Length: 120
Image 1 (cartoon, rainbow, N blue to C red):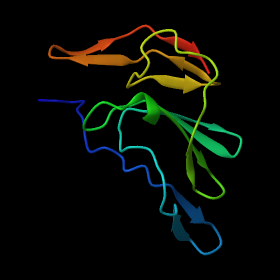
Image 2: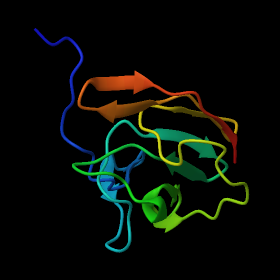
Image 3: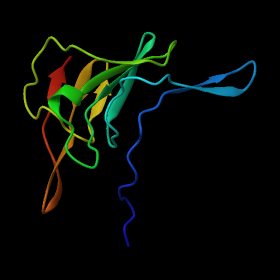
Image 4: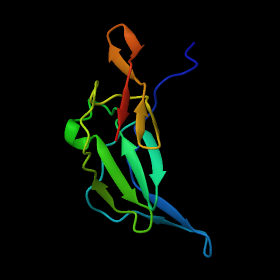
């Protein structure tokens, strides 16, 4: 019996609910992050920052950092000034206040915790 398991990857479409009409608005077609799961996200001003995760395959370095404009629902990549100290992309991490913490790496033996503390 598996209590915690995987699932389907998120397609990374942005949605917003209009509270006057109660109609959902979907992000316009265009660039967006590769589908993923076990990513971290944090609201920063009018943006939602997204980091890492994994999809049906590994997330490339160019696909690691994204932001969703919460007003327009348009995605764009994020330029990070600081270089990662360790483990460039790590699924299952935490993002809080621009700080990336922890995460896991996967091998044939399963998931293993990794030490990570990076400041964006």
